[in-house]
Length: 178
Image (tube, rainbow, N blue to C red; front, side):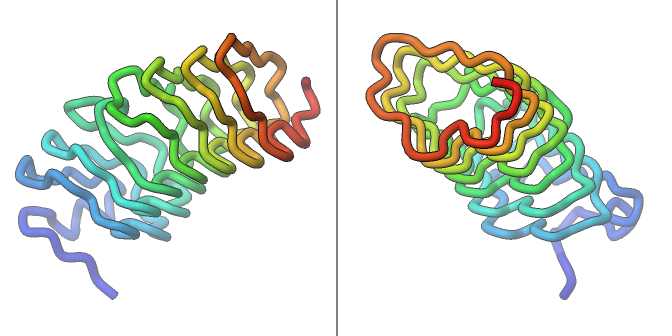
């Protein structure tokens, strides 16, 4: 199959860098899923990323949107299986839940900043984020989903605050550094 976005050249995909036109405000479900030739995606107008939009785009190391990653809303599995290495700062996000599998199998993520707007961390949201070393769960988070941090082998510090009601099964299983 082929990908066609007006203003997006095929050269950008072969060089690994995709620059979306400013008019693109939404990346639909699975649009770049499985793309193994892209290393970076940028887009000034992007505000919404659909479920599994970049799932298993295993060479994708960086995303840059003018509103920053935190200002976006994104669906389940959006960045699952990518090579993201940047800090995941969600402080500007309007979302109240970090979706299931959002950053699962992202072995390059070492820092995640969870904002006070978040009340739930979805199932397997950060599963196998093996470079993640610590996480501060804000007091607004009431639920940590099943397997949310499963397999985060370098996770050595978790800070909980008042307000947490539910830590689901296997939320921190296989976290050998805890």
